[in-house]
Image (cartoon, rainbow, N blue to C red; front, side, top):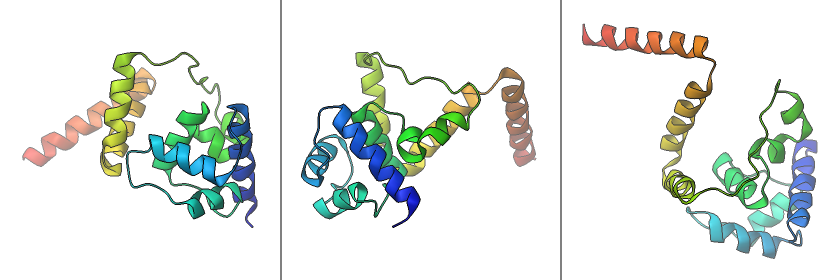
Amino acid sequence: MSNERAEFSKRLAAAMLAQGHEPRPGVLVTQFNLRFPGTSVVFQTASRWLNGKGIPEQDKLVVLADWLKESPDFLRFGDRAVHGKRGARQVKEEAPTYDDQKVFDIYRALPAAQQKVVCDVILALAAPPSRRSISIKRRAGAKADSRR
């Protein structure tokens, strides 16, 4: 059993307990499938996540994190995700507004490739202004070159 998988399994079980859920595959598969807009996972998949034999793909990890009120990075990587980033932002504790929830639902319904584009845009907008302007200038230059 991979140490990384085992550590993920421990964090997943602890997060489930913290939210008042027994860390059992039946509970996990039911709660997960209620929230995941894609193809449902089966009992064996949930069992692998809880028994340290597998780690969910990013789209599934995001849904788990949202349900368990944790950050996807923390669920996946633990404390090293928090300590590895200087000045890591805290996850918002307040409930999303209706508009936020609508945007989240639309995002979750997008194919993985489009979700990546949305994430790239958000990360670009969140970058410090100096890096953002360099990135915008590069894209503008690339567009001008493609028109020639």
